[in-house]
Amino acid sequence: SQQGEEDPQALSIQEGENATMNCSYKTSINNLQWYRQNSGRGLVHLILIRSNEREKHSGRLRVTLDTSKKSSSLLITASRAADTASYFCAPLNSGGSNYKLTFGKGTLLTVNP
Amino acid sequence: DTGVSQDPRHKITKRGQNVTFRCDPISEHNRLYWYRQTLGQGPEFLTYFQNEAQLEKSRLLSDRFSAERPKGSFSTLEIQRTEQGDSAMYLCASSLPHGGEQFFGPGTRLTVL
Image (cartoon, rainbow over all chains, first blue to last red; front, side):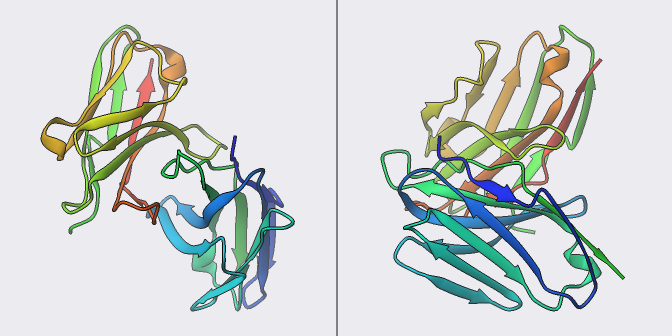
């Protein structure tokens, strides 16, 4: 299985602080994607990092990828209450099944006002 | 709104009844996916279509589940003889080829009494 495993399972911070979530996976990937899910907007794609990339930025998001350690991290800077959600990493296989996302249980982030 | 749409958003049924869900993907996306999500878990892959061809079906899908995508446009997921264990959120997603981001619909929440 190519399931991403997120750590920690839950994270509670104050507004304005940074939040870091980690992801580990098992085998070779084509890319790794991060998604956010909250009750209001469903599952939303945040950022995609390819296997030949090491770091990527999008607004307040910063994603790193270390293929030698089979791990990724998502950093949210200057967090807001609206960032409260579950965050999932989803590795995409580099093999024949290069379409199937396998999600872990996610990290539940709570940003307190 | 040109995103992925799903219908119905909620379905309550009695055990043993059949249910059918519909997904309308983003029009130019030839890939379509169904996932299932239970409380506290990430989405689990169910099946995948490329145009009208169903190319993979997860072992999670018993013979009571069937999915179609006639003409490569909308898709339906039918569950026959529903069981309480089928209660979950059923998510549909679509994407362009080449393993890019997947766009998710709002989901259909199924409750089997």
